[in-house]
Amino acid sequence: MHSGLDAVRIRWADADPGDRRGTSRLLLGDLLPGAVVRAGPCARCGGAHGRPYVEGGLDEVSVAYAAGRAFVAAVSRSVATAVGIDAEAGAPDAPARIDRMRPETTLREWTRIEAALKADGRGLTLDPALVRIRTAADGWTAFVPGRSAPIVGRDLDGPAGVVLSVAIVPAEAAAARRATG
Image 1 (tube, rainbow, N blue to C red):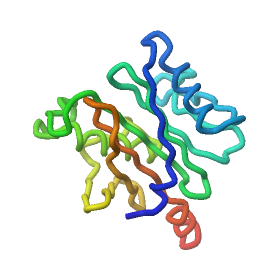
Image 2: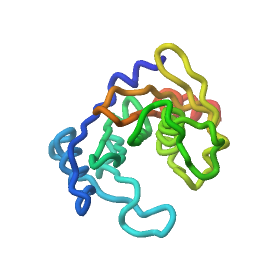
Image 3: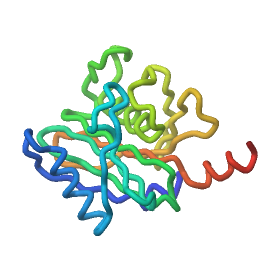
Image 4: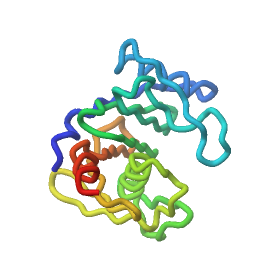
């Protein structure tokens, strides 16, 4: 599997339901001291609560919320051009019950798909049923329509009762795509 996944830094903490974004910003501040994290525009409505980004572009970040907690991931742009994290409350083999997905989709499968779509940058604007995951002993690879290179990921140990996955777009994959394309 891709060694860049080892460079992804993860944190989580209990989050006040009224200020979970504030909790995620505090966690990102812990991971990236001195960095200025901003919220990008929402892909659906254009509001200022979309994908977070770090001013200056030295790091990539992602956030997720589940089971009363905020989860964050950060990675240097020298390692990955994007990161995605997803967390869902429940057991890994529980049904995901997500619209547009097969009824037999598990929470583990769903967290992989959503982490990959966050790393892809299009999130749920792309039909998640189109993403294909190939697992290996040390992680998984996501094949997302419209991408020339796969996204790599792994499942994480998180708090009890939470299924957690992270995905990255490796920097060398982006560099190779620019060199050939």
